[in-house]
Length: 406
Image (tube, rainbow, N blue to C red; front, side, top):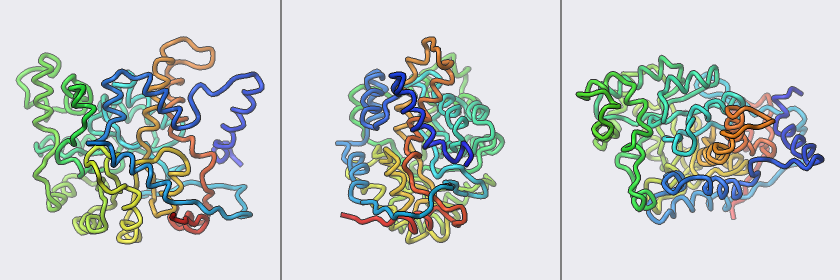
């Protein structure tokens, strides 16, 4: 088998062999320990932004609890020596059925932000979906990704010239799909951010795609850096469009040749509406619990969406994925691809301070990237085996793994 096919097992072996020299992993292996250490490394504002969710944070808690309501029933002696975890989406093959989810403002946890995450993704051949509110321009992140597959998450501006410019830039920079987020017509009620009176955009964080765009700069009567408060206000004026309806998807299709994936779907009816209005796929998501307190858990919605449109279109999933078993459950319930969010940002935040110090093992740039991918790909060592001859991850996971719901 190739190194690529055995990298999960190789990482486990590496850890145990290093243990003979009393060397233990420099990033916590368990999610809870990873989260705790990462939050300790963040300042209060960054912690609130990354960890915080809407209202009493019940949706975020329910996202995680939903995974515990399903059980994996393993089947033995299936011949797992040769393993192929690859999946295909819109004509591109991904080595693994996981993608880095779009999380904005990553520079609040590490100065390299999305650039470091992109390096990590490229190092491990893990696809990445970049947020509109990235700390770095989409072209800079694309340069770091190289040939690694990438999608662009699209917050739809009411300024149609700016929206069209974003779509053109994404296509020119090699992004292969547009993921339009529809669950944020207005920003959710997020007590942690409110208590800290903190919105990173007002400090110029997360608006690089705007300040690097001629359509946005043309709205200003000054250079973006000359009056940061006025620039931030212009951003707020052009971020999000609460007037959007399903009919507006026609405009989106008219302004890009890329596949359009609608993110934020929680019902079979909305999944059907998305396809009826030309969507090429959907992502089942409740924004990681950051929008509506008391919302249905994303995993609860997944089987219904898959039953409705899974045979016709791409179905992605995010919200609540914390470890490999979670990703496996989502795949077994019908997702074609799992988007991983907070865990990789925790890895980025935790290694950031260490990466600034000299290391006998690695440069700071490589160290930061490695910590991020360890957080994102830890699940590989225990994930289910996929048959090379199987036509889709959905069918394979259902064939090899049955889930018993409590």
